[in-house]
Length: 292
Ligand code: NAD
Image 1 (cartoon, rainbow, N blue to C red):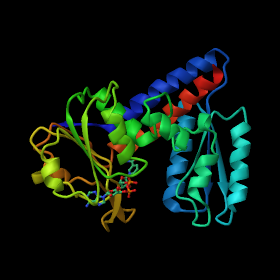
Image 2 (image 1 turned 30 degrees about the horizontal axis):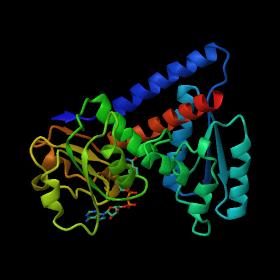
Image 3 (image 1 turned 90 degrees about the vertical axis):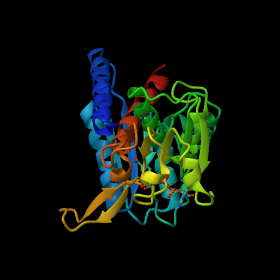
Image 4 (image 1 turned 180 degrees about the horizontal axis):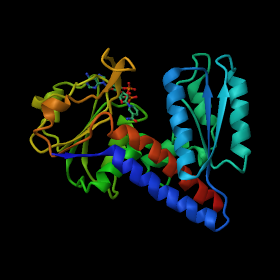
């Protein structure tokens, strides 16, 4: 069994980006600049957004964190976005989700200029993704493609089963893997909460992407020998033995499947760390597109 090591792979990618940025700076070019807006004080969201800002610093990017209070109105947030859209110093920016309930998330995501939408959530970028046109592929599916590529996992002609149809993971993943592209050309089945006889479907899969958010859902008996397993799930499960009081659990029963499969991503240390690396990659892409 080969562990698809997202921690190591993401460190490699960040190293490659850092070298590229150093090269730009040596040529007196300005560094790529990522901004992030966060509304409110949600602990997990703050942790994620701080990790993104730190990652920018480590690779030599400029970064700006805009912290807005929980009481920020939709109009105020849209005004902040409008400022970033026209700020020539900012190459890309993200609005950390979730937003407080009084703010319309869709309206906010639609307000981000598509050429700076490094999360790839704007409908124009989602549409381009569906048409296999150059765009920003959102970080989690992008990270999975990158892991499969770097570990030389063959996807062409394979049976892929994606579990979960969310807009940020399952749906784009199913579209991308079916497309005519380097990591793609697969025969994809997209499954979800209304799917019948899921086990019969997963047992036929050469590659399974589990993105449903139910801890240890995918069991050994649901997987065929030699399958490749991508575990996207991250659920905090109470664990008094940990200093934090919780541990992170994936959607796959790792202990139950590990001896059957050919490749598997661990949780933590699999898909999760890839996400930030791919956000940096998208920012670099935005930079080059704007510089051109
Ligand atoms: P979501 O909660 O938006 O959607 C869950 C999906 O699972 C739905 O489409 C639903 O139909 C499907 N589902 C639910 N129960 C099912 C069942 N019994 N059988 C089959 N399908 C079922 O999902 P999401 O936002 O894509 O998140 C999924 C998991 O991935 C969560 O644990 C989340 O924390 C994690 N996640 C991780 C990353 C990362 O960077 N590693 C990024 C995003 C999400």
